Image 1 (cartoon, rainbow, N blue to C red):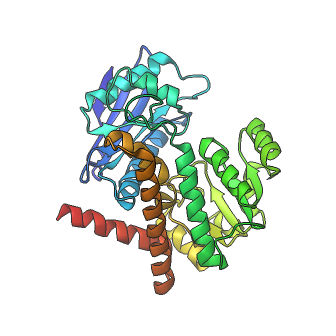
Image 2: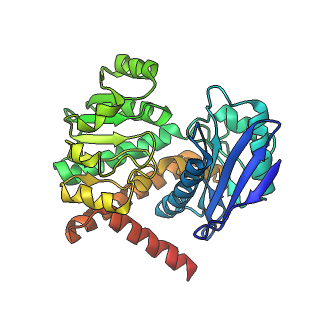
Length: 349
């Protein structure tokens, strides 16, 4: 196992991890431990190269600092990425090697489930480190965070709809969902039960077919989701999908989804605002998962009640952000960052 420090001036600590025996290559990025140990999931993707993987880790870990602060959790921000196809490259040996890398950081970073990972994978990682959450069994086990993440996104969609469309009711509304992994699938269930019409897409054609059959959803090709006529666009796949090329294609009133780092640049929040599209800041909308995971890291008793109260508080934060953005006539992304910066600076003081 080789663990080497990577120079990243805006981050507290970043390491590259390589284990030749298992084929593990990846990064762990700790953005901040100001509010507590850095917490954030491990993502496994077939990145084109290590530069892309590192860039993702840096962006995602910063996003976790903001997400955890917005949810008022005693946690800092961190993230890990593993280079590889989870369907073909993930092995018990690779997961155990990653666990050893996490253990070597001595609690400065806690890992959990993210894209390409499952609760079973967390259990395997947990054989090599104590600093893992999202386990299925144990005194404070929180399990799969996906349903709670989806519930928080659903709440955010309703709140954004209230601000932009005049009502939180979703019956008869059309929602375009991009990405049908664990979170996207659960979100479709919430939306369907609320009476929304669904238009869905994913690179996994079999999953698209399953969701279409389960919820009576219309389907489109991945590249065409941006141009569909809908009330709400819910990105639940990869980040940086709201950019100078996709934003002009949108035919929606609201963007609210579960993907991390949806805005490619800060200017893209302003582009959405200029078009009259209300953007629900992603790290507030998708904070439910880390709230669920936090019960395990922080050893919270009465998990279900605590999580529900935190979800309600998170929704109030979203309402506050959208209200202030409307009053100031600026992008909610700007307001969200300003509010979280206030929280972080207050902690630093």
